[in-house]
Image (tube, rainbow, N blue to C red):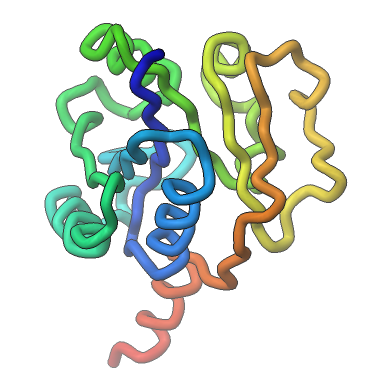
Length: 178
C-alpha cells in the first residue's frame, strides 16, 4: 500500500479558518496519510499583483496548521516554473515521490471551471479528486467534466461548509484601511 497524500493547493491570500477547518476535517475523515497545503506562488487564473509575498503566505499557512497532525504547509511549487499549473505540479510530485499516491483536493467552485485548467484530462485520468462544498457553487455536481472517465471524482458531501473566503477577507481589510 502506498503513502496517500492530499494536495490542497491555493494562494492562501490570506489563509483563514475555512482552509484550516477543511484541512483538519479532510485528514480526519478520509483515507489520506497526509494533507499538504501547497502554497501557490502564482495561480494562472488569478492576477499576481493581488497576492501578498509568497514567503509571507507560506509562513502564515505554516503557523495556521502547525498543531494539526498530518497537515503540512508546502512550498513545493516555489521551485517550479511559473505560473503554477496543477498538472505540472502533480507530474513533479510524482517524480520526486514515486511511491506516493496523490489526491487533489479542490472546491466545488473549481469543479465548475475544471475544464479551463491546463491538461485537466490528464489530472482526471491519473489522480483521485476530492471535491468539497462551496457556497454559490454548481448545483447537483454538474460540471463539464463530471462525465469524463476519471480515476475517482469523490464528493466530500459530509465536509463542513465554511462561509468565508480570502477574497471576502481582503475586501473587508480594504474597506477598513484609510
